[in-house]
Image (cartoon, rainbow, N blue to C red; front, side, top):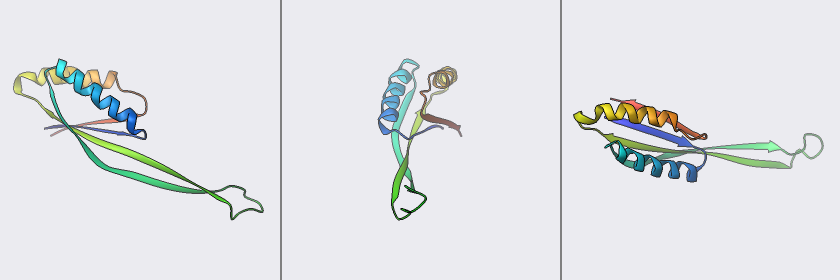
Length: 104
């Protein structure tokens, strides 16, 4: 079993990258299942706007991390193809997307 975990702060960017991966995986004769939506992490920050007199005035920010999981189905004949696909993934990663490949 091989899993590809993707995470990003931008949901549109990661969705477009998943479409790109599925199209390119078909060229390598690899079937990608998913994406499985993992729970997103949300961090909230509160910052004081003015540190002097107006300390009651505050601004709030939110940082969301979107996570997706893809499952790779490989037959014994296409294990060599996955090694080439793995190198292809690493060479064509888009900035702003985290990639983690787990082989079990």
